[in-house]
Image 1 (cartoon, rainbow, N blue to C red):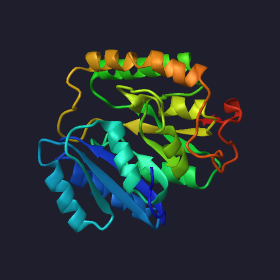
Image 2: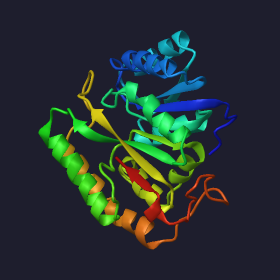
Image 3: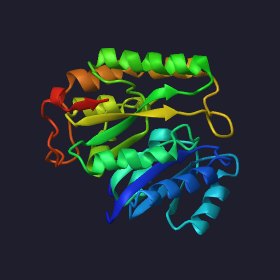
Image 4: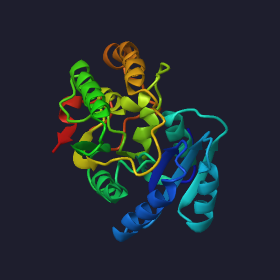
Length: 269
């Protein structure tokens, strides 16, 4: 992957699938929150992932209105991780943050993750969902249960490892997105990959909110969870039994380099 000229402080990458009613709120709140913290150069990469509603049109309108918005488009739906990849390839930030378009991760928490990642030795900073305001008890149980399984299988002394609200040093995200197998739901595995590759991880507590507008693209949480669970044998092979591989010849330029002792590379609140 080639992120191009890296001359910004922060890139916010947002995969969007049928999120027409959420995007203006997302962009306005993100711009306000980031500017209020005095973060100079930033961009918001909105990836239209083959939406069938007016998401693409709204992204175009927002790009005309806000100089920080960068439109990215997929001709067909390719999934969250493909959105991360496409957004990353177009991004220019030293720190790259992934979030969702539905506003369950509050834009007001973006500066917190950015500051923790940018001004510390941590390679990535994850918002863990300490306060959970999702109204669906089934979704909460399935999500927290799967997170617990990941912690047990991969020996992760962390809280919620499934959250996709993560700020990465640029080269770290590039390396984590370089994996061997085809996964149905790799969006659940970045922390697993980061731990295995020796990157330093910090978690900060956040509130996970109710979706702002529209409906989730996951029609059946149970079926989605079963299909995600089918990724586990491949993940066990890749992240427990094979040697880690890295896109770059050397590890990250942080206190805990790739291939170091991952047991000393974790901090959670």
